Length: 329
Image (cartoon, rainbow, N blue to C red; front, top):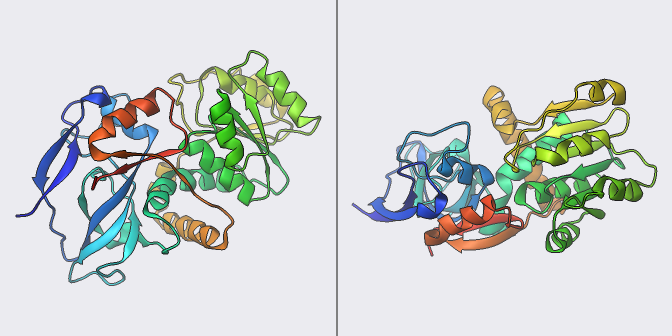
């Protein structure tokens, strides 16, 4: 039997304890394809899960990773729409941090030659979440103003790109000049230093009297309430995650007084309840990529053996853009 390398999480611990294991290469079932993984997108949730800090804990041992791109090396006899040699992106429930993976063809989407493996693996979850949050939950409109918290990470950069694709004005909040410069390069119109004590005053100056319509918040913690207080009438506060590690507690009367809404953005839960939506959103995003409406870009890349180092960088909130792992290196 053929072998492959994979990252295996054997216990919930600091990601820097992760090691590469040699294991048997999977064999596709009749309705599956075997993918040679060229790139695996790494999310903040991956790092939290390995550390045992995420609310959902998979059964040990497991191979992390649920965003991959690669080339089909073999297709099962009952596979109808994919073929050997085709470039695809895919969403496994786990197992992405490996040189090979088998998946049902329904989890795979062909990608154009113009979309690199790195960019394909880095856009899927973050862009689908941003589209679901801003378009479906937030009902974003052209010329509205959006504040993106934690805007330099993969989640934030995706939100910048989607919001600009919808014709909105984007204000990006990040804690260092390097991160704020990255936000401007990603398309943000303005930036604010939310590590500053007077960042809300900075925001007011940037707004110049125009209302803030949407807050996209994957960070939580101490930044959430000032952002909520900055919303204009009929504003929407989108709760995406809690990268700061702290879940904010809002005075509920603010929602009443400001006539605003707090909306939970749970892309995974939404597609679990509405499976057909995933393909619809993905098709829309692929059309936007092809037309140039959005332009996903990967962040820093790491070798498979450096996965733990990459996750530690994410947990330390030092990553800019979406980190990508190259399992074949």
